[in-house]
Image 1 (tube, rainbow, N blue to C red):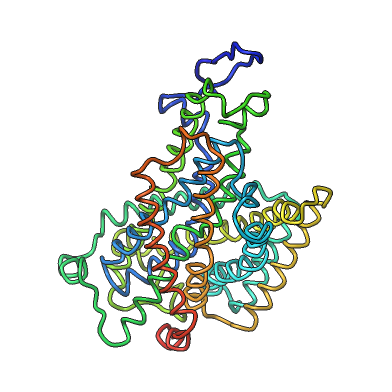
Image 2: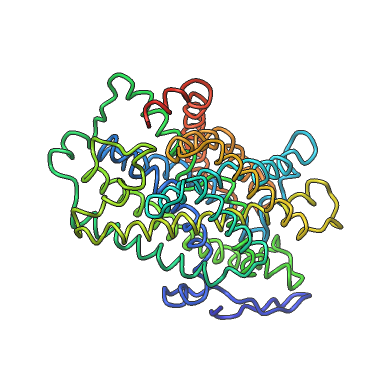
Length: 460
């Protein structure tokens, strides 16, 4: 880290590293957690839902994702505010929420230990569908090999080289998508037809609700990832955490300029990752609107249709480029899901049980094994339904993960010095954002409770 040190001249002396204010220093010293978070998002939402929604509703898909990104931003912003303003992960303070003892920490355990089985299954099935379209394997067979292999890599924690390779392909895919959308934008007729008025006739209203709710659940990711980005942010030892490590009190007003500088830096980092994620999903939606609209791929043709979205921009060679890039993006998401979910349960379960003697690494390995085995059995039963599975699971997430948003808001208000409490403008935004998120949840509930048979019929 760089910047001029500030010395506390009170009872305790300490040199504090202020964040670099220039962009060069920022990227050299502080940038990182947001891109780890962004790589999680470039999975089911970008590779599966982006093309499906763009192919179904044309350019209007960009508006769908823009609304979702604007509404969901606040949950992570609050998490970043807590990370650097308190020097910890918001999940550590969930025991302060009103209600039954440690209920939100138990809920977090359930999300990462149970719901992430389904999320891994959904993203892994999409990964397997791409592989099965290129080699003589069925989707369930490819899933068992891929997710089982990822589980072994995470279990022995020797996957860093593979992860770097996958990240490289993912970034290359992102560049291709953006350039492709610039070179081959939707036609004027498609833009005029779909930019502001999606076709909602007949059964398409059901499809609209289902896909909107799915995007709201998966894009950019679920709110539970505020726990994961909190872990990555705190690993850098910056902000109020550095104060605590030196025995200083974050409540002391002498350190408030320092804390503010780090909150601003953490927010800058996250904003870059968030913008990167949105640009890529918008580019994918526009490419699908150009090449696939109005024929959405559905389950059976998902992989082949995905390989065609760059064809009008770069020609036939781009089929292999996007298939490799999409595989890398999805498979890196699978690895991150397995690692992040198992580590989260290992960290949070001792908090929920108030037993610090519990072996977090043992918990991690047990949870990892359960996720791999149960998700594999689920996919073996379901077969090849990658789009339907993601739409269904994402709709569930749109309902269940809402709780992380107000939980983060509560612990920020309760634990940060008053100077760092959200302003009136931020509070107004949080209110409207929560209303929007609740609407997304209602749409997800509609999918979860009443229209799944129709979805399977529409996608097959």
